[in-house]
Image (cartoon, rainbow, N blue to C red; front, side, top):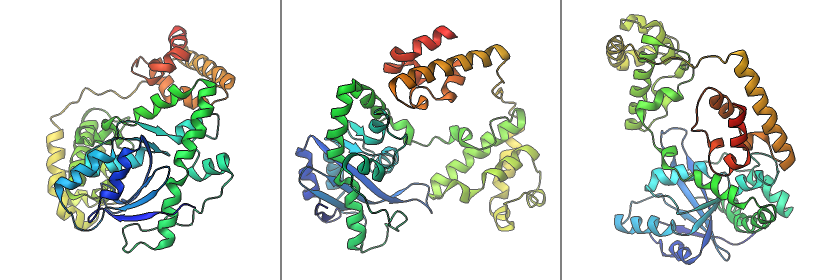
Length: 362
């Protein structure tokens, strides 16, 4: 494989900043998030046509102005990533910056009819008949020093990104699908994907979808409180209070700490520490009648329309040699059938290809 250079970003950023003169660079990250709410960026791999940098951001904070300059500069070239959503999230939450444009090789592969959600190693094997070592997928990247075997493994994760871009772009151009890939890649630059609004936490709470009235109001208030606590303490949501316990509390509305003790997954220590906050949230929620109504079930005519929409999507997908979920996931079709007109299926190239026809079926 290509040689790499290990760069300590807390000491010398100039080597990596030289990549800013490139029009396109490959990017990957290694991070840890098992014990924190926000992922900790532990390593950032950068590839150019001639070099691979393993940039180490851990250690001393260094010069704030220099660090700001680094992130501003490194985000100027187009980034090539594979399944880049998590990489973009950790970089955005670390730096507050996003690249100006990206090309996601996993998205590109899907539009060529390759296996949906294909992994990086699978794509490299498909395009270049090269086997990558995946022995270190569960490594602790926060440990220092990083061993040479780990660094070589990390460097391989960007070694083939730019060659893959060239090959995928050529194939996409021939099929007239390059703009589809660029549009779907561009969607990943929406910073709203990576921001955490406690008021919307109820949407991520498993089991809350069908609650209504006081139970719904209590679940929404508890989810918002938990999100704020997780953000403040930088700890995983489930470490604050587990989903099943939160739903149990919202439904049963315990009125004392002794009643809270009966809730599964709530320890005595947790009740003593958080019980007062939880009981106050429940008391406040009793005054919130909440106009939320759970999603209604489709009637027979709507079920028939949904099946017809799915048949149309399947037919177009088969003609193009693509997975139906890539064009129009069933979840989005169901939302359209129930009146949602904000679906991605009704925008951009999807609308031209199939969206207008689906609207006609409705």
